[in-house]
Amino acid sequence: MPRRLLRRVIPDRETVHQRAGLARRWLGEDDLWHLGRRSVARAVSVGCFWALLPLPIQTPLALLTAIFFRANLPVTVVAVWISNPLTMVPLYGTGFLIGAYLTGTPLVPLDEMTLKWLGSRLPELWAGCILMSILGALLSYYLVNTLWRFKVLRNRRNRNQPIGKA
Image 1 (cartoon, rainbow, N blue to C red):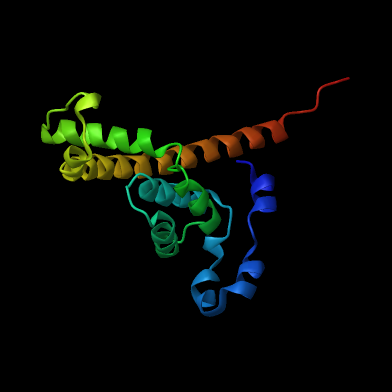
Image 2 (spheres, rainbow, N blue to C red):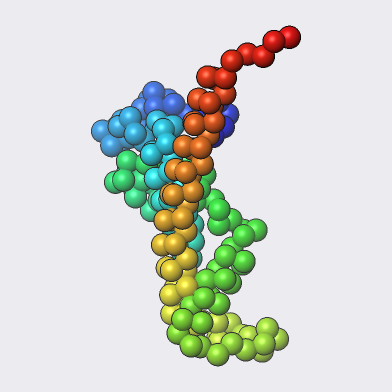
């Protein structure tokens, strides 16, 4: 993981403590700011979960969930921005297609879609997005955890190799 880059970009705990006010007690835990394998894996998982749900307040909900699960807060915020104005249509469109498939809803051609038709299909959107967010959270947790372990093992192996003759 790009640990040095993250340490330069992410504010440290002391900076947040100075500005936190009443939230100091919750924001002072070490896991919320530590760039460890488990904390970062939890953070990416929480961020992916909330990013794949079509809600306007994803970041505050992700932060509250991160505090509850003791995940890294800055990494959580970055992970939530998987869904941004450029990626919303593909993400939620895929969620809608999955939900329509699960519920057996027939699809109409794009030129026949209206806002009224889309508004009546919110259960399909939510069914697909909930499934995607659960799967995305699980997969991202295990992916980050596994990649981090491989990186640590590779670094350990490289440190233990003897230096070649010049």
